[in-house]
Amino acid sequence: MNTQDLADRIAAGERRALARGITLVESGRADHRAQAADVLAALPRDRQALRIGLSGTPGVGKSTFIEAFGMMLVQAGLRVAVLAVDPSSARSGGSILGDKTRMDRLSRESAAFIRPSPSQTHLGGVARRTREAVALCEGAGFDVVLIETVGVGQSETVVAQMADLFLLLLAPAGGDELQGVKRGIMEMADMILINKADGDLKPAATRTCADYTGALRLLRKRPQDPDGFPKAMMVSALTETGLVEAWSDMQALVEWRRGAGFFDRTRADQAQYWFEQDVRAALLSKLETGAAKDVMRGLGAQVAQGSLDPAAAAAQMLDALDADFGQGRVDPASDSP
Image 1 (spheres, helix red, strand yellow):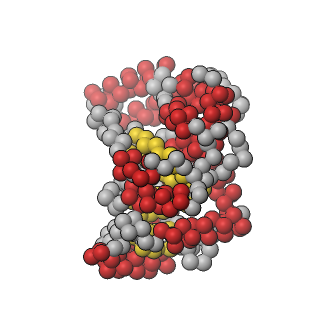
Image 2: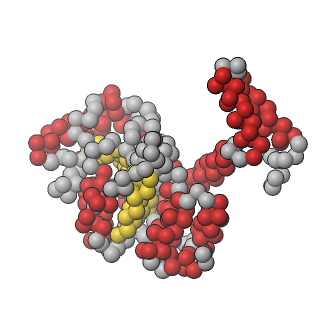
Image 3: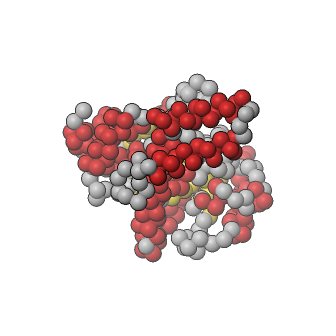
């Protein structure tokens, strides 16, 4: 594969090239990982999209909201990419990848790109390489990248480490004020959108919005938020009400953060976070190869037989790894092994 040619085609906005690039970065093969790094390095550095992460419990209407919101952005002249992460089976490893079928109108728009990806059992609501897929979409010239998470609950906060804005979608009657002050995903949200605020559910949505508005006042104020943020508001993806107001508030928040210096600082912190995550993942993969794998297998057998305590076995494994460092196989003080 000519990685420079692929990068040039992605930069030119070719959808098939972008899809191929995302497939490349999602691959676990060592040669594909090297090619993916080359493609990412060859993309234009001066393009920047607004990255919006969106989470919420299953059934809250994330896909319906994204289609209505994405259509509004496309009609405003923006190019929109949607990265939808689908849960993978813990048994078979397969994923349905059906999010695109729920966005029938948006998928037909030439200014929109929708890519479902399997989570591959990766925790945190996003796939292992979603961040790199976002970078590819930026390189392809998209103005807004929407990252739809799996939707698994309050621990789904990793998406906040790759987004400029983090939206939390909630359903009417989804919890009282006490539910709202629970730590975790609530502390990460920039805006809370009460979806399905239409028809018979509108009174319940009004009460839920009031509960969470009160709950947000009890949370410690973050330095990256101007007055009035984070905030809760009602929207309806079905009737498409509240979307324009929500987009206006998102733009106001981003502009304030740019002017105050928080936007670039947050992106720098996110880059450092993902550097550390990649190092940790690479170190863990080393346990699956070579002598480390044999030591792990031997200690694991002793633990399974009951002759060795799991904590003691882990300590022995760490001692073995420390011995590798001491023998110069890995030198943490140098730039290379």
